Amino acid sequence: MSRTAQESLSLTPGDSLGPFQLGSLLFNVLNHVRSYRSSYPSAKLAWDDENPSASPVHLTLTTPPLHLTFSPLSQRLTRIEVIGVSPASWVAYRGKPLSGDDPDDEDEDVVRTVRRIMGPTYGSSKVKGGVDGAGRCEEEMLSYPGVAFGVVRSDGGSAISRIVITPLPTPEDVPVDQAWLHPVLPDNPTVAKGDLRLAEIQLTSSRSPAIVRLNFHSSPDQRLPPVELKIGETTSEDILCELGSAIRTFWKEDDRLTIHTAFVDSSSPSANPALQPNPYFLSYPHLGLTLLLSSASTPHTLEKVILHSNLPGEVQFGRTTRAVWALVRDGERVGVEDGWKSVKAFLEAGANGTRRTPSPLATGSAGKKGKKGGVKEANVEDLLGVESASASPNERGEALGGRGDDKPMVLDRTAGEGRGGVKGKPTEIHGFPGIALEVTQSGDIETVWLF
Image (cartoon, rainbow, N blue to C red; front, side, top):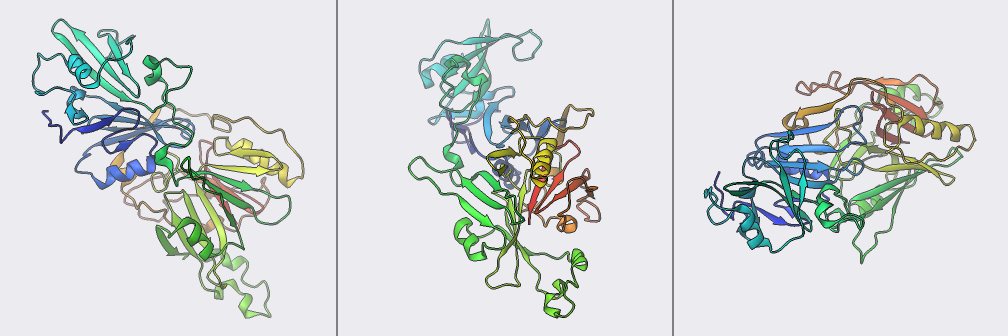
């Protein structure tokens, strides 16, 4: 396909290709693809079904022919690869197409054009197996800072087989010509400014609610102080000032659990929760947060904090970004990257008043049930054909506050919802004092509910 420079994807080595910028959240990229379906008619998502929380997520587009790789924990774009028959014809650098003035000229040496446009470069390295992975076509990687070109040479000249864009700066211990193999994002990429970096959930030994400290990415010249959310104290005005307006606001409609507390004080009708105004949710899908506020008090106060993990393969995948969280108590911590067994042991130790040895950062494999794995694929139309804001969570587990060894509640988010054929795997809800966790069949934690 012949393309002009105006139609081509603009390349900024180490930073971006067209609308795709390194460091962008998977949630934002998926929203972009969904918003411009005419530009991206076909897309595929892939992940490791055995270990969805700690393995990369891959998004492959056919037009333009791109392969995007997102990091496991933060779900940020770490690598952009242009693939296909003639990848250079899709890319322009400073307004000049890499395929030359005439993309249909089969006799042109594309590598010569790249050197003329981008200048001299470092030494190249060869890749065994080449393009087809069977050793029939050896590939040479022509490397620049932040971008590398796969080159296939023949008697008639040379051709570009793929283009790989990776972040800058490159790791100190990695040679420049090998940096494309080791894409590492900076700790605080520019595109991340204002995004949630870490939600620290400070647990206390008493029965008082947990304190959630939201730490945000900031620019080097402006550090953003953490935002504290305190259940029963933080007001709607506080949330509006700190987090801005919610993307979506909706009333809590499921009041079935109020039957268990409806007659706490029969002498006072006002104490009947069934007679109180319904609370409402504030949804911040770009932060991975959903907040429940009471409307029975003045001012309205925070009742519940829900943190989403955005796990591939689950019903809620693609509706929010991932809120990276960590449970903290007495200098010890476990986080979203740890398995369910580690988190459960941490909570049980706190409930029993005992200390435990802090577990090292896990790879997410702890607590996983053995099953057939492999790579899971799904049509992006099926996964993205939902509202970008978080749907109202199922509230059947909201009153959980028992011990960790209680029988978990089974939750099927697709039961009776009529979601257009969307199917999901049931999850389990495990309750502890002031906290409930939704655990998937793979042993990962899908949501954390604090109340």
